[in-house]
Amino acid sequence: MRQQDDTENMPDVVLIGAGIMSATLGMMLKELQPNLKLEVFERLDVAAAESSDAWNNAGTGHSAFCELNYTPETPDGSIDTTKAVRIAESFEISKQFWAYLIQHNIIELPTSFIKNIPHMSFVWGEDNVNFLRKRYEAMVKCHLFDDMIYSEDREQLKEWVPLIMEGRDASEKVAATRMDLGTDVNFGALTRSMFKHLQEEAGVKMHFSHEVRKLRQREDGRWRVRVKDLKTGEKRNVYARYVFIGAGGGALPLLEKSDIPEGQGYGGFPVSGQWLKCTNREVIERHRAKVYGKAAVGSPPMSVPHLDTRYINGRRELLFGPYAGFSTKFLKKGSFFDLPKSIKPNNLRPMLSAGIKNLALTRYLIDQVRQSPEDRLEALRQYFPDAKAADWELEVAGQRVQIIKKDPEKGGVLEFGTEVVSGANCTLAALLGASPGASTAVSIMLGLLERCFMERLNTEEWQKKMKEMIPSYGQSLADNPQLLEKIRGYTSEVLGLVPAVEKK
Ligand SMILES: Cc1cc2nc3c(=O)[nH]c(=O)nc-3n(C[C@H](O)[C@H](O)[C@H](O)COP(=O)(O)OP(=O)(O)OC[C@H]3O[C@@H](n4cnc5c(N)ncnc54)[C@H](O)[C@@H]3O)c2cc1C
Image 1 (spheres, protein in one colour):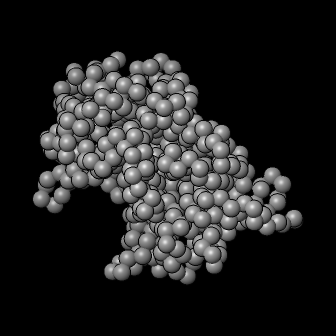
Image 2: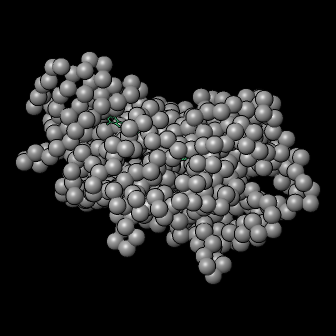
């Protein structure tokens, strides 16, 4: 196999992976510094074919309007809305950046990549209804959520979600909240438009079917990125000042290869997913909402079941799930050796400790894997009592790799969020974890810029551009109702969203 050292290839930045995270960082950096030399390496032959693809994720514009796991009940019985506020604010930041890209004709994307769709939480049973009422009362105290409506009225609920109410036991106590400001987002289409634009920019090179195999920092501080062209088998090196590992599930193995001390002790726990996809147009047209329920006891937060209206490639769709599962792959198109190969002496203890402490989760996943089609239908019928097996087919969703990290007291802990790990004077950063994910990509990348590009971010030029891209930059939307109203008005107009109006 021919090998070559291409020392001429010395970009400022290398982005590994062509998902929404690399796309967002690449777009932000290129807007902030147009003369930046950037190279992107993606192992597949198109962008956004892993978790960022529309069929591989739920497309929920996570704003904490409906996800009950973002508002835990504290031991004193009150509802903690801290995480919900943070996520809602993050999504407002994402919408501002997307509105900037569209308003400035930077990306060609029909506004239909994002659509208003009511976000609802639906529960049944006395305890759950009490929880939802309490959650609603806590949420509406914050202006980010003050358009939320709560109802226990069966007639009202029948109007909102006929499929969920028909055939349901009339004696059962039910309740729902509804936010008409909710959205469905085609993150795949968004990612591909961002890369389409980047590809046409001076100083940007995109390489599909190119897998990054090794990373090593040289004495001059540049990273030697070893890449294999999967079509020709050719290997070459690229020497970058800064590397972002936006490889989704593939980020952990690359972080391990970089050998930065900050990356030691991290492990990954893969959780796969499946959906039931509705094939009956009549049924699809009768539901118009993203309806999230309560996760089963012992289940991981990302397995909260939801009956979801989607808009994919201009068509309305209906999905139910996700059903969690276990696979040793870190990427949907990855290898079964991903998990075993990621186990190293430095993460063995954290992984074992986290495994022992999360036996309930392991049991839950085993049960999910063993589910029969009848079991899946049974789970769907809890939400849609009259569902017919013939109207649904099983689809494989994206793969998520949850973070396992060292913990001085517990040995190792399993986390369900995302984390940016950086090292070598912040010349290398990796994004681990998957939730709440694509919706918060802009805030995650803002955090990365603040951490790794602080000096330049403080310049007048970058500050000015940041405020142009994200008008609320540097201000709190959670603390400023007037600013939120103004910002929501602006993003709704540009993105074709109609806030606070109930639409059919
Ligand atoms: C079932 C499911 C439901 C979800 N629902 C939602 C939701 O409703 N809302 C939401 O906001 N988020 C959701 N998410 C999370 C969201 O999809 C992810 O957070 C997001 O897509 C991650 O983007 P990424 O760019 O980090 O990774 P990805 O989109 O996975 O992209 C990583 C890319 O890196 C490439 N790659 C990997 N290794 C290498 C290598 N060595 N060399 C070159 N390329 C490499 C891969 O091929 C891939 O294209 C969901 C995820 C799943 C799995």
